[in-house]
Amino acid sequence: MPVPGPGYSITVRLEAPPSASAAGDLTTAVGEVGGVLTAFDVVESHADAIVVDITANVLSADHAEDITKALNALQGVNVRKVSDRTFLMHLGGKLEVSPKVALRNRDDLSRAYTPGVARVCQAIAANPDDARRLTIKRNTVAVVTDGSAVLGLGNIGPAAALPVMEGKAALFKKFAGVDAWPVCLDTQDTDEIIAIVRALAPVYAGINLEDIAAPRCFEIEARLREQLDIPVFHDDQHGTAIVVVAALRNALRVVGKPIEKCKIVVSGVGAAGSAIIRLLLRKAPADIVAADIDGIVHTGRPNLDNNLRWVAENTNRENVSGTLHDALVGADVFIGVSAPNLFGAEQVATMADDAIVFALANPDPEIDPLEAQKHAAVVATGRSDYPNQINNVLAFPGVFRGLLDAHAHQIDDDMLLAAANAIADVVDDRLNASFIVPSVFDAAVAPAVAEAVKSAVKGQEVASTA
Ligand SMILES: NC(=O)c1ccc[n+]([C@@H]2O[C@H](COP(=O)([O-])OP(=O)(O)OC[C@H]3O[C@@H](n4cnc5c(N)ncnc54)[C@H](O)[C@@H]3O)[C@@H](O)[C@H]2O)c1
Image (cartoon, rainbow, N blue to C red; front, side, top):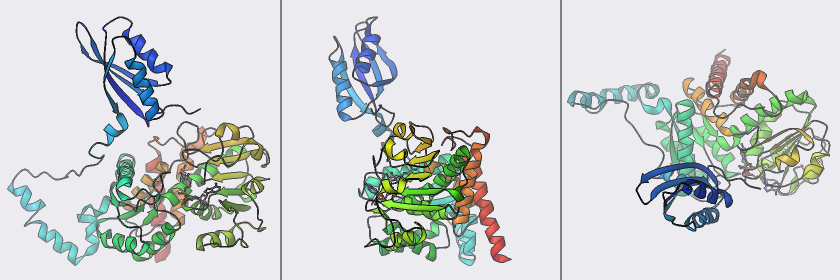
């Protein structure tokens, strides 16, 4: 049964009689139709009436309507206005540009802008590396999308993707002090996206690709990495892979199994699943069996695209075919980044003892976590209302902080694994079956990830010059 959460929250402004029972009547009315009351504020008081703001979490527009009707039906109550608090938060956007220099007088102006700025331009023209020292490039990341795979909403286009990209930029700033800017492109043509990102790259020290559909995202990232001298990171792929690898390291500690002896089933071989498989292979598990909407991925399956062929050739040692349910038999670990409600407790029962289940499809996981818990030793989801939330926020701010601080020109799997280890290490001795990853609000995470990534970049520079 879904529970109203803060993602859909309304404030109802109403007039009510100033009676002693008014507050009780109003809050009871909200509760009786299933609203979760979070605030009750008297904003005006008169001899014959009070004006009250009632704030409540609701499930849907219909549910908000039910609550409004229930309040309006009370004797002497008159609803004036209903506001959606989520929309209020987005009014006018969530970001702004704010200058770091004072522009108080002619002297300031002459140095921040013309004529003084010309000498700074000439310095950069003479030595392009100075752009990182003398411009916003040092700390700025582009959050690039074509709006083709936005959250679970699908291909809603670049303008509709902007609220998500603004939110991403806000998270970059909040958790790691990175200045990120949304770049929503009105094209879904691979060559055109690559050409545009290449052309705008001089302003940025990193490119975060976001919500670009598979398989196009693989080619865009690979070609941009070849063409640019700044790191290119598709968060839906690598942010997810980092956090999954971190969580799995700790989950395996809980059950006391070495990864080299584990059979891992990955459901979903799109952006997230492919990147998880590639990073997990670096940890040398006993086997990985991947499955998607057409069943288990094996070399004999017809119509494999480049990505699926690579997966088929690098997983599934015994080249088995069949369904996800077949794959689960005897598996130690399930990692789902695919679709809701694909199996139940009876399939978890067929897995090995002390099974680990990461059901990460959003908003509804591959299996209800309460069902999974009947037979699994550790369960994780992408949801904030269950323990063990696998969320990319644990990775991308610190990853880019580290890359920017190291003046990195590229990103590789060693840096991703360093980030994963850093996240896993933050848990330390707090580890148990319900705490395999730190909270997204743990202030220790981003600095730890940044430091680990920075060290990995530096280590690699030393190795490449040795
Ligand atoms: N919690 C997290 O941290 C996190 C991170 C990334 C993705 N996700 C979730 O994982 C899911 C996939 O994300 P993506 O970006 O990789 O999407 P995608 O579209 O790139 O890939 C989806 C994959 O799931 C497979 N699939 C779809 N329906 C299926 C079904 N009925 N049975 C088996 N496989 C099925 C597809 O064949 C494809 O391989 C989404 O629900 C997303 O929200 C969660």
